[in-house]
Length: 260
Image (cartoon, rainbow, N blue to C red; front, side, top):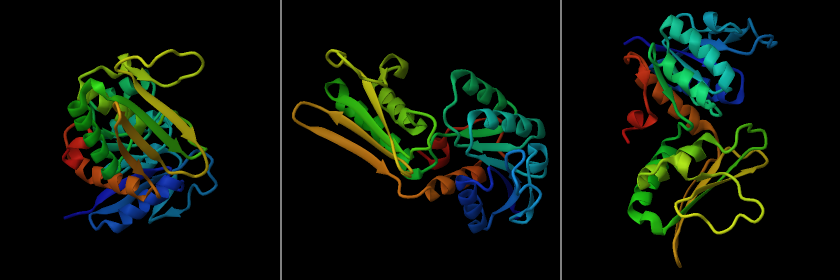
């Protein structure tokens, strides 16, 4: 069976290096393209047997699938190229606005796409547990989430925190937008029934922590995930890339890939 060729966006960045390492460890995959920002000093050099490019058309040529952890604007630009050339796309980019998500979905009409805020198997199992807990505990338990990431993270709250908040809403059969609360300051009054609160912390080099609290009268449940490295994010993205190659166009949820 021939190896599947993976193009890596941000190939020399922190996540890009981990993705390339995960690809190298997988006997079914090979690095088939490497992309960096225009003007990067290493463009034109060798990168795992391919030439590092700053043009996605060149970087994706011959690739079967792209893995991208970058920024919303660049992800949409690169996804447009992938859609034009028929290359599957896996992205863990967070921070999209509503219009950006609409564009991403439109590209998935042309190529298979997996977009997830977190590719850790454990985090996605956590989301499953949160959904089940919310359904079983019901409205008598208040839901609050706390997330912490490194000081350089640009979007807040994290995409994973929002996904976990959505899992709470799903378990309660609510619409998240009607219950999400991202800030408390001043005389805010008593907590509104059904609120799903999310608080954001930033500091140091923390790869990511998420804690979901279900707080009742005299008792509470805490479900948490704490990342010590980013390697599991890369491993999950590589697993998704293998699964996505050869699929029909569409936007595939990470739950399908992990069997949740």
